[in-house]
Length: 383
Image (tube, rainbow, N blue to C red; front, side, top):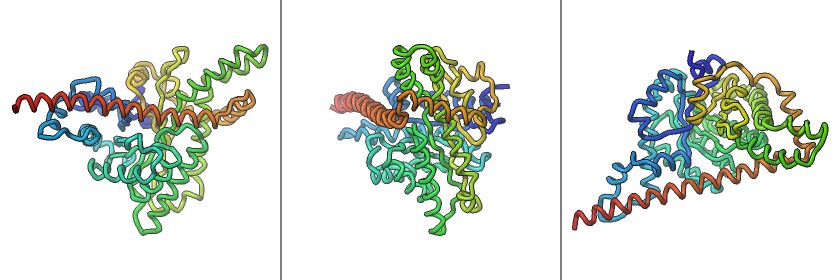
């Protein structure tokens, strides 16, 4: 049986970390839903940059936007394109949404990354996008900056499905779960329903190892004997250990009396979603961040190359419910080695925000160039 489809047997939903117009129109996405058991789609500014700027698939739509006496707003042109794709994907995934009672079948659309440190602007754009898309199986993506976590709480209180992204640290993840509960509690106090609201916390994985391994390499080069071996044993382990400790918190919180009142009112637990699961180190298994993070009530959003690799040679089995003590020991050993994981994860968050903002700027610039060319062509034709 297809390894991707079998992950459902272990309580894990497979989402696809990619969206582009041709996969929607060619039947590729419909085939993935049917044959692979695909249960969701995630997008981000980098994904849309590759889809729109590097192809001609959107040129016909951009040509339409460029007609008229005035040049169209570039940001508005992007969101119009993105919303068309999100709506089409949401419609294809609607049967999954219905059969899963609203937990899967989700399609994620991210707020503008240049709003990452502006709570009120994030809330306003999220509400606007939610209304414009008009699909119950939409998830609005909000970054897990401190300002973003506050926005997430407010959006949960408004009843939106939210994907909290760019999570690297367990401490920030705990803050996200507290915000989720607070948002649901606020709805309950107002007499509003808490059932039918879905949320995921996108916990990034491979980027942690990429950064930590580089720092470990510097220490290994200077170490000898047992110390050198201990440092080597931490390579390729910290991202998984970090994720397992986060999952331990998930299991503790959402199975505790603290969540009982909300659960009885129909609220669903916020699931952990493993993101950044493409393997960047060629010395590691190309499916390492799937096979080590399989467990109940989780999601793995998988980029195209890793998706194809796991479909070919994945070996599904539960791996998240064990190794928690070892994970804590590995994180303690990292601290003993002089590496500050809190500082590393904060750096990764900062870099992630900047990276998405850069992709967004590049995307808008590419759209502006195309719109200008189409507009000038229209003006010449009219003249």
